[in-house]
Length: 183
Image 1 (tube, rainbow, N blue to C red):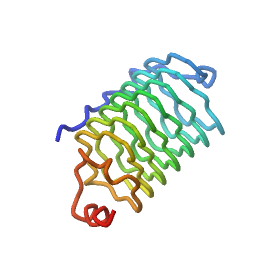
Image 2: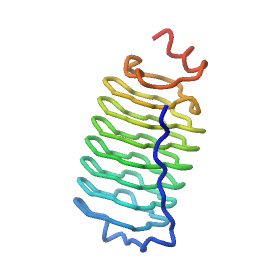
Image 3: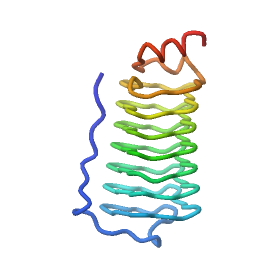
């Protein structure tokens, strides 16, 4: 098991971002967005590099086809995180409450979810390398058609699972194996 690469961000090294920069196809680099409260943010096909989102309160964050590299989302709540067909590299979600995370068909490497609550995590047809979920609760985990490598679920709990065959390449604890066995 190869652990995910850590996101190395210091808020002191980042410029303050503004809501006006959060638009489709944006190219955001070395920015910090703190206390973002907005019903809907549209960042379709946008690129975020070395970006920190602190305590967001967003109903829907659209980032389909986007690219995230060295991004941390810390605290806060996101209703729907729509990131299907996206590319994520070194992304951390820490202490977040998320209703639905859509990473269908995404290419993900070095993902960390720590102390999060996710109602539904959709990894259908996604390729995920080096991921760890620690202290995280997932209501429904969908891995139908997923290709997982060094995907560590041992520190997480989940209530329901779709696509047990997609768990190839995942590390599970005994309780998770018991849940998956009948499937």
